[in-house]
Length: 126
Image 1 (tube, rainbow, N blue to C red):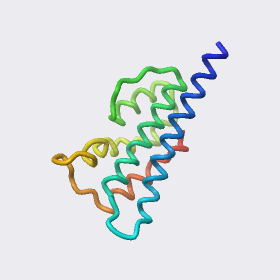
Image 2 (cartoon, rainbow, N blue to C red):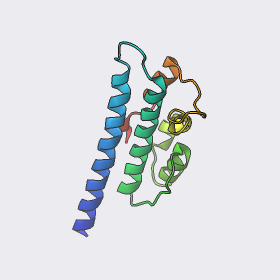
Image 3 (cartoon, rainbow, N blue to C red):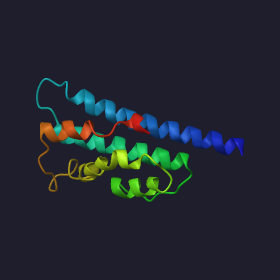
């Protein structure tokens, strides 16, 4: 049993490190002197939220589907988490999982939208 706990802890830490890296990249991109890629800032904010929620699900030993849908992940977390209402606005990040990355489905992401994407959900919330 102790080995299982250690493995879960290792996985959670790994997922949270990746989430933190996404948040750091998003925040750093605002410091670029020109051509700030707001769509990529929003994408990395979405990735931070997604990976953080998945880390929590791993911690609670809850299986989750392959998805980028923050709403689905929040619903899964909500079965065992009391804090879920505090991050409901993170659901707004879901469209950035794809629309910010792929040509043809891209919609313009403004400075305001990318700033808002980074602000509402911090990886340390969990």
